[in-house]
Length: 203
Length: 229
Image (cartoon, rainbow over all chains, first blue to last red; front, side, top):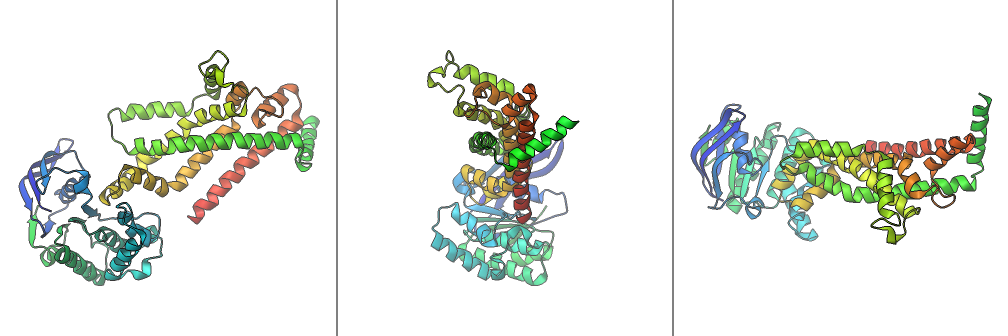
């Protein structure tokens, strides 16, 4: 999914927190966004995700304005993900369920993604009781399971041990290669941006 | 002082002997208030969640009106229902006044604002993050409402219990639309009120104890369920 941003401005009260004249996020590429705290990285991600509609400017997705059909093809993993108070399996199954996918296919896809992210041992656990690192992995699995066209990641590897970071980065790269899905990753970690990103934007 | 102690003794006897009249009054109270709470919850919970997450102009004013209606006096609700259901009223032809159905209607209308307001407030403060996640995972409006109800189910259950407590403990509405007819529309609160005015305390005390027990049992169940969750 290609995203074009023109004359984007975002204010909190009188304070301008975002000012982007023109930005194109290329289809099928991984774009890393880095920058200091408070520069508007997360705000930009929320705007692209359609979660924040109070802005000035124009954003198009493959040339179209945001609608339900486009929104259904993208997802975001938050820095502190909210997991539903049910099992890890049910959490990951959720986006498939709301898309009306049958139970058998859902099960296959869920088991496949938990295997890739090496979280099979968590599948029966209550998701909201997991550690920060485990929650990040489950949130990424829940985002990847329905193969979105646009994956937005807000500091997806904060609170995660180095081994787990390797697994997550591997799966993000694999997702991009296998599905040609566009990825935008917001991170403080410039090294991570370089490892993953085809392009890096410093804000 | 003696008559109070005597009243308690006789009340305990009534409870131990499972007095038929007491049982009838208690069962009717439970049936009417449970029906009203279920009906009110079915209507108010989805609506409360919907308006809680919806962003619209005048939401603050809407909140204030909602919270005001939560404490609407039961006699007002009883009076309005009685006027509507009275023979000359718009629904008089249904012949519902002084029936159990009229009592259920009145209590349903009484607790709808309560369940709605509590759910609305709860969703307004805690539904936002759930809604955002649901949206990013492809959920539609209805999926989102269901998800929020499931995620906040313990708090919603507490709200339902609060509504039930309000329904079973109110006297004004059921007195006006039910008429306190013995064996037919007589419930715990109307009996206590009547017995008090007659100076017949044992039955009133017995029913008062039962009312407290019902409230204790319901809140204990919810408390243990929330601990498990």
